[in-house]
Image (cartoon, rainbow, N blue to C red; front, side):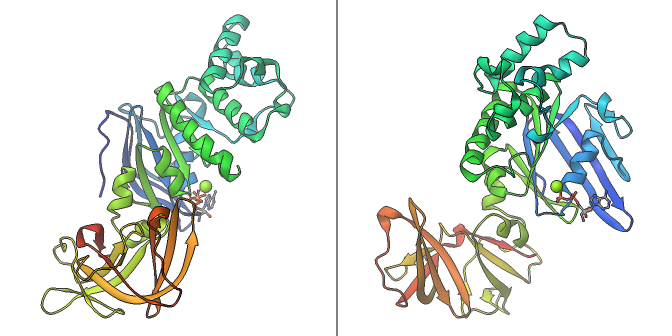
Length: 358
Ligand code: ADP
Ligand code: MG
């Protein structure tokens, strides 16, 4: 399932493949990235994200397929002749230089004069929300988050058409990372540039991206908006990748109804795809409810309240049904006042679940 961007494409990949010996690190990837889009590739470690990005940036040659930038095939174009820029982690900054010297580096190579360089560097400090006084500050005196911003300002100084990011926030602690995620989204918006971003955190991808491509063993298994990926995952892998999820293994019975494979019961589901025989019924924790009145939900199962966890504004409950543990959440104001180990019924409506065959 490939949801198209609504913008004109700036970058197009056709059957893009990279093999290392017998290993297909990237396997026949087809994709269009729209101009000005924030596109994120997400997938577990080793799924081929970095290899994909290195091909796009010109640091790795494709084994097969094409990379097309604004209608031109650029497979063999070296990195330094592509109008794109890889944003390295802040470690790639020159440690013995000032913030200003670091940002101006690309302009200096281009032969831009001193006054114009400084003017642009100050603009970029504004864009990255760093005080202008930082122009003369030693880069070693900046905090981790500030250095990340300087690295980004330097990338903008190249004035690339596309910026590539390979997990730039992965080494940064949680709180700062959350701030930088939002900032990056704002900067994307203000700059109007195309961003192609890589992360192994779907949560991070959700916050920032216009669209997301989920990668697994070299293949792009689903492309869509964050909303589509979250609410309509195309398979079990994608659904599980995004945080907690409840999955019931199901099969069609002789009467064409869905029946649990390990759980007893028949379940109402959204439309059953043609040819479906067996698969998984996926229910997100926020759609699963503790049922207090009979018939409150279309599907119901009985279990016991196993544990509860305070998550700040929400409370998470775990309910055991046979061997399986179900997770559900309620807002704190609607906390369920139950005793551990007491019998509870949990339920959900068919429209709040997704049926996948893989
Ligand atoms: P990710 O960035 O998603 O963690 P990578 O693109 O780094 O994944 O790696 C994908 C697969 O390709 C991995 O199995 C990795 O070991 C392999 N790989 C990456 N680069 C090379 C290389 N230069 N030589 C051989 N194998 C490689
Ligand atoms: Mg990687």
